[in-house]
Length: 252
Image 1: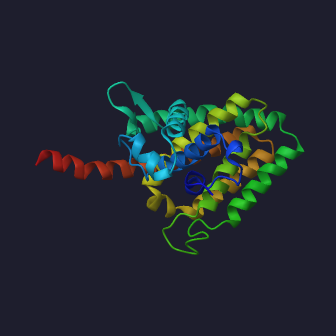
Image 2: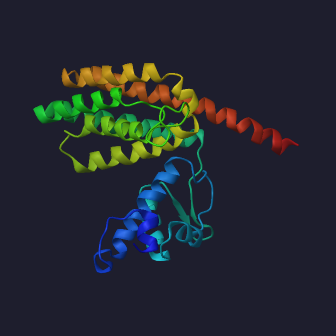
Image 3: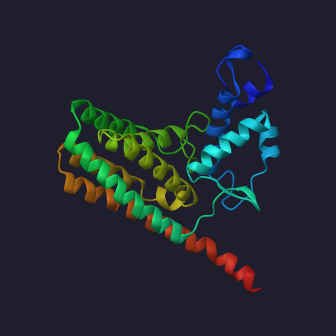
């Protein structure tokens, strides 16, 4: 298998069946994951050549991946600095939470109004899978405390997106997906504090699910917004803790 395909774990294919677009998609998924998980720190300038070397691919797929992530606000671009991982700050978090509450409330109300039996079953199944998936560990870190399980992350994302999947608007669903990913960047920097309320989190998910399938739109939206807000409060506290050493260093 060619180096680029091996490094990016592309499906087996003949060279003519693995166009630049496929390499770009693989680079996009890997880079997106690294940004959301803060493996590329907030505020860091992105070196395209360095990424291409590390991913084992050319410059063009990386540039295309960066352009896609720019359109999703996971990367910023300027004429002076090129591509940069956006910083994390309290003002942006407040704006993000407000947008999540507004758009997810709209999409959830529409899903409750128009969702069919298949939508209900999707919400139930997603909640069940989330509850049954360990938050820590994973295939490479079985039961390891403090190591986030990527299967839990996928199940968590799937549950939240299942709630809005019946809204009959691909635009709303897309925006809710993008806002979820943007919020995940903040969740990662405060995952220790969030883990301390893990059991409460699971109860919140179950309560939101029950209100949704009971078709109680007011209750479901209230619970979902409270869930977003409580998580944001923990993130905000972590941002303040992180800022203290930086302020002391600046003062010295």
